[in-house]
Image 1 (cartoon, rainbow, N blue to C red):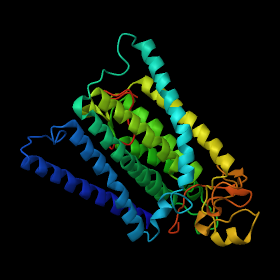
Image 2 (image 1 turned 90 degrees about the horizontal axis):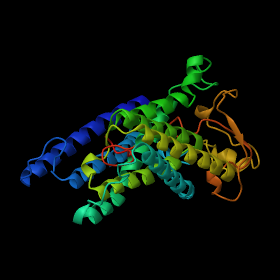
Image 3 (image 1 turned 180 degrees about the vertical axis):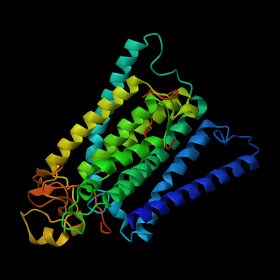
Image 4 (image 1 turned 120 degrees about the horizontal axis):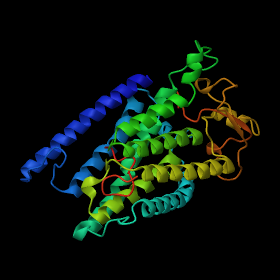
Length: 365
């Protein structure tokens, strides 16, 4: 079912995007706008809005694929709790802000050293439409970034993680099955697809790859999309807002990037991941899908996993971490010391680019 669901989602995404692109061209022609394939509306802001909306449609499409093909609740795409853990998401926003500030400071320092004669950020050129652009960016970017996280760090990673057989399952003793059940392949594929969906080149692609792989690993480690969503949304809001300020929205999510951008993004995600890992351990954030009956009947015991979530006890990525009492609801935390395994459900239940100082991961290319 997971490969079939992925195929159905990919086909639906292609069809929907073709329909939306055709509709945009028709609207432009009716309005008397002589646009091109890359500049349909002859307006950087209108083109950006179209791009963000097109990317945002990936979320309802993968929701439909999970519901109709895999016959599972769409909430399982968000986290091992079967829903968005809003309190945990809010907690993740706290370290995202200083990580962004430090990354910005590093990029500024590198720019002053390597290019002392050029401005770090262009002069204000947003014009009278700057406020409108800012409002639209604030309204649409969270949906765009969320759609990419749901599709690539939720839907795709879970599909890849469901391929291998567990230790107690048929043909589950082979080395290939064991490897497929590790998080490595899912993280690599998610990060690679995320990178290829962008229209950068050179250092810009490396910048996006660093961000994508880090967010994929963080999704696995925390058992949900909340941590990746927190940084992704704030990062893109910053990058798009700077482009609107400079009047370079026509160059957003394009360009070759720079090694300085790759270094600053690496520092950003490293600091953020370290802070989120500390918070997750401190707060006892659940990383596995626990058996509800086991949670009710084994207070103080380790939470059980469904059969499809079992893994070899000697797997090197297992971590042991006691739950932290008194933070999330009982459904969000393990009631006692637990062997933490792969953090995503695997079954039916379950740098500068263009005119901006940063690349904007998740802009959809």
